[in-house]
Length: 358
Image: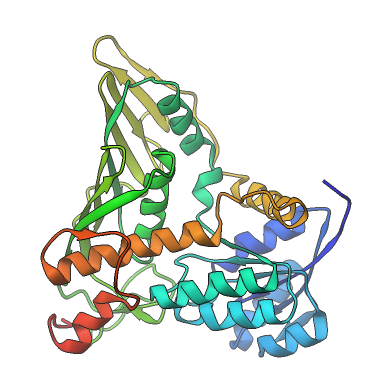
């Protein structure tokens, strides 16, 4: 890799921006020069924490004045498409966008097109593809530790779009990104009130169910049918058992257990059980370093054209699965991929009055 240096900026200076900013600061080839947010309080906090002197309320002013090479987009999802188009139009080489990529597939298509037309690189931050425990599990599966994989069960709290996108992305990654041919899904709209902007609790009950500027369901379940015969069973939100981004992978010769973001009771993160014999427990691994490795690969992709494992095209596939779950719930049947609708079926159901908010 060359010694080229990069100017970086962050648009959206809330909670999700912190990992991006730290990765920029940790990389000797990157200089974090600016940030933008509509909130003065967010701008001030970001500036103090990361010693960034140039802060803006308007992203357009940031782009015009700072001319960054790299931009992280950490705003709410409904804003991602417009910002991605504007950033690439300003000549930025790499966009590192937070997940979920967008709300509607039509927005994701605009984002991918903007990158292609500008010659830039778009990645979506499903950073668990760089975390040690998930990589260990994937290597074990590839090496045949549990024989031929037959089923992947994934568990996470949170709605399908906000948190389930990580679950879907890792399910695809564990199965070597084999294409998904069809999806069956169901959703629950049990009244829960709004989720607070930081995602950490609820606020006063009212007649909406919103998170980060878009509607969400309270819980969902899905079956993903892969081209190679593997099935994935996903549990999300209030329909999920305990654990966040937790996986149980069954094969013809055993089972692999992946703890997710929190370790199992014994402190381990990856466990393997054969059909006979004791369970093997791998040494605990760290969740640190994923963002740094994702950034390293982004620079490599910009410079060499190498494929990035968090590509915009991969992020679009994750969003397609989320919307396929909603479409299956709307039609009450299995839906085939590619998905024929380009707008969110959840939003469509709400608009048509097919389901009720609280």
